[in-house]
Amino acid sequence: MSRTCRRCLQSYLPSDNTPASCPFHPMTFATRPHPAHHYAFEIDDEYMKTLEGWISACWECCGSEQKDAPGCKASMHVSYDDPLPSDIQ
Ligand SMILES: [Zn+2]
Ligand SMILES: [Zn+2]
Image (tube, rainbow, N blue to C red; front, top):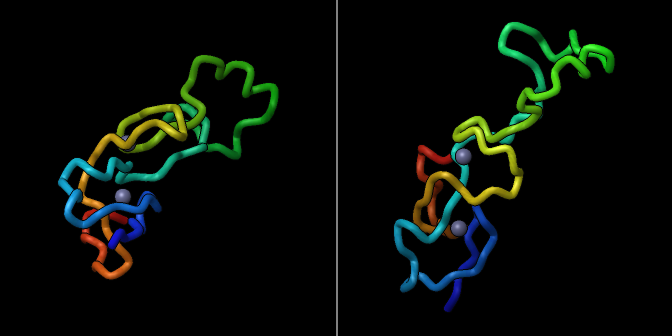
């Protein structure tokens, strides 16, 4: 019987579940466009223009700028019956 992964929401067969089955990003997709020494609230439209070329949003774990980029880490699928591994937030 197939199960549903609570992380990627795909159904999978426990017998096919390997440590590479479930790619994911361990950190959040950050949409805070600003250089390291500025806060986001300092940025208005005018200032935004000078920021062209800066990464405007990225996965904090790997720096990938595509929200749907494949996960930079992989693990086994986690069903709703399993406890979440502590390294996955
Ligand atoms: Zn990542
Ligand atoms: Zn999964």
